[in-house]
Image (cartoon, rainbow, N blue to C red; front, side, top):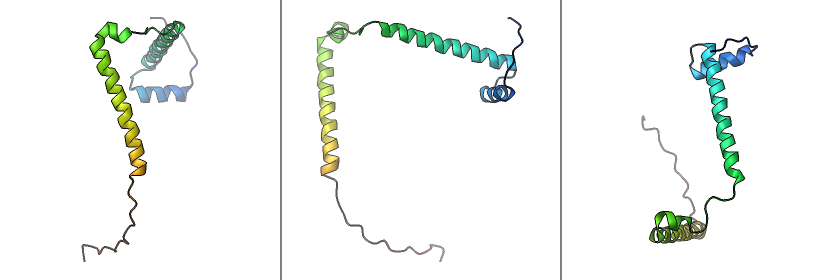
Length: 111
C-alpha cells in the first residue's frame, strides 16, 4: 500500500461512502480506483476489437454449428419476421371500434 495525501470533495466522498456501503474513506477510494481501471480496460479491449474487420466470415455459422443448424435458424428468423409483420398489420386493421356504453355510477357498497 502506498500512503498519499489527496484533496477531495467532502460531500462527494460522503455520498460515495453512503452509496457503496464501505466502512472507510480508503476503501471507497480503492473501490473507485479499481472500478475505473476495470472500465478503462474493457473500453480499450472493445476499441482494440473494433479495429479489425468483421470477425464473422460468410459461412461462419455453418462451420461452427453445421449446415442443418444454420438452415433451421434461417427458417426461424424468416418465420419470426413474417409473424411480426403480420401482427403489426393485424393490430391496426383488426382493431375493434366499439362505442362505449355510458357507465352507471356505482353505489358505495357500505350503504
